[in-house]
Length: 190
Image (tube, rainbow, N blue to C red):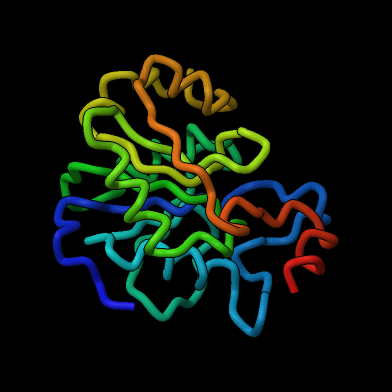
């Protein structure tokens, strides 16, 4: 797939620092599916991004990325997202956010999400069950406007951070919304 050169001002944050409690605490970014790591799939999904920050343990990658860890570690998706945004060297117009455990999200998914942000503060992928997934695009300026203080970020639920924003929803196509929360989920994807 070719890079979308019209995506200028789009940067990405991959959330890879979770506890993976249902997977015995394994680092999900290194889990393999079809001979590739979940992190490799996530980085592929953000192909169009000018820059990508991975919030999680540093590992070798095929693409240059910046690795950071929120302080304190394992602060949840809000702390991870905001830490990742703070680590971006560029000033983005749009920020893509993706959980590392969603290997079926693709550059096409993010293109649909970016298109859906028109007239909104962002857009998120929703599964067949109607639940918002941790795959979305946010207007960077609007995100900055709802940012809590540093202490408020740790353990904050993502839906609470995003509640004041006008978010479009993008229906998942096929198995885009599938995430790997357990070893059974990984087995079923194979």
